[in-house]
Image (cartoon, rainbow, N blue to C red; front, top):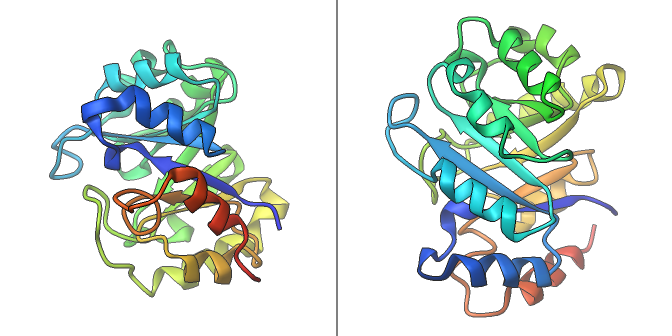
Length: 220
């Protein structure tokens, strides 16, 4: 069964970011997930534009850039001009007055457009944007911090999205409290990828490659 694994780089060891990128790449990670937070849309600050640009320069693997910022339309060009074909930018629809305008800027820059859906955001409120985007990042925790607990009611939202994905031509990605059990349950249902943080990947006492290989060997 094929599904993507993305490393949540806000959980990486910043004492040696170059080694983290190199080890994850050698371990066969599929992409690098970059969380950008402004301290306003979410009550936390995380990775910077320079962090993102460095990782983009250090790997040929795709970047998934998750903008947890207010009014991304004002700053999205700072990100698109540092990214490459095959990279993705997710925005939160609630963070923008006219999210479709911001998504069009992402598309015009040759970057893959995506939206991130918070636990409290219904599928119905983003229905028209599902016709524009190529990826939907489903937040299974409230955004802003690593190490949070999974919110069970999000599973029903994923079921709704799975029923729409083929007709509307988008992929679904899981972000937050991603355990082996959740991958075993949701990958067969059609979730295309999983963002890995402290639950499965970071802070463990074994090489990333071994951890990633174990995940890919899960029994479904």
